[in-house]
Image (tube, rainbow, N blue to C red; front, side, top):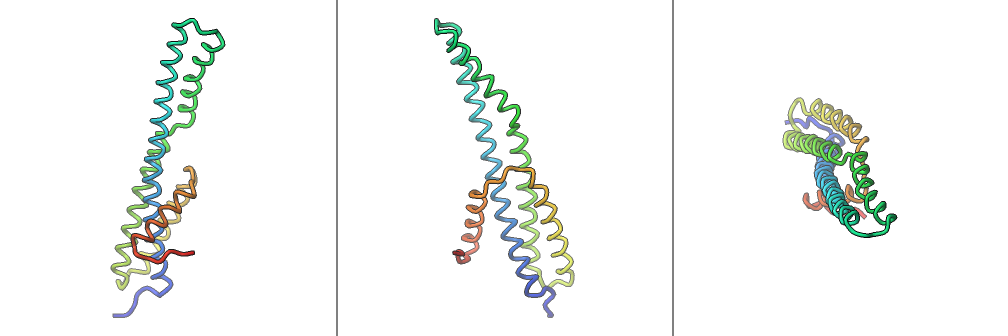
Length: 162
């Protein structure tokens, strides 16, 4: 049976698969990260609010009372402006889409001799580019992405690059 994908196209499928898989792990991790950040700030608001309540009920100096009242207000404003749940939800959606793309690249890898393999690769590369563009609005944490890229390389038993 003749080879339907060139050597370069096969390399593109392999790299697309690993890249999409690493990004899926990265965005799943980001979803968890932003959820934890939101939860931490929410607890800080709760803790600082109880401190403000105690300050009002005690004979602390007025300046301390004002500060203790402003701290939870500041945390609340920060939480409102940052909108971490939206970021976590977007990361969750992007995780799903990268994971689906990785599975589609894997499927093509397993069927690269199909007559339509070249067209399927082109479709996957278009989805990859569109998804990359959609991720531009999300926070980028390079160290974490590199961690997941190393993880995927290790999971596939590939030698680490220097």
